[in-house]
Image (cartoon, rainbow, N blue to C red; front, top):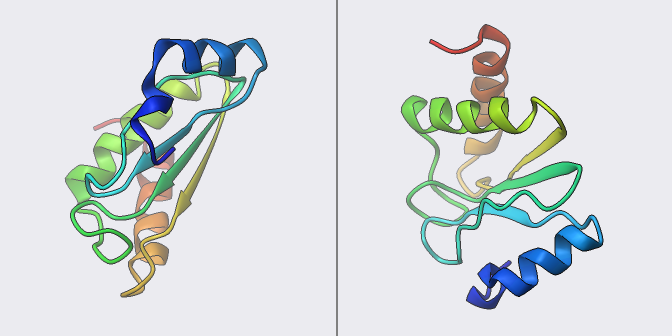
Length: 106
């Protein structure tokens, strides 16, 4: 979802009509950030909080993502993929997010 046209209401409606998940991408502001739920699952790609592919996520940012994931997962599956691996942040961020989700809201 790297073009602003994907945020258009017509596009979102078409995706919902065909049960196609719109990718929720956090890309350090490089690409559109769209959080429309269009399918029976949510697909999230976390490319870096402040620097694309390179930066890690703060605990506060991961708590924010955990809250979103909890809301989405009330009635659907949520798949989260970390792609901020240039400096090997992805494994730590994934484990921290998993711990936050298991621990529940704070």
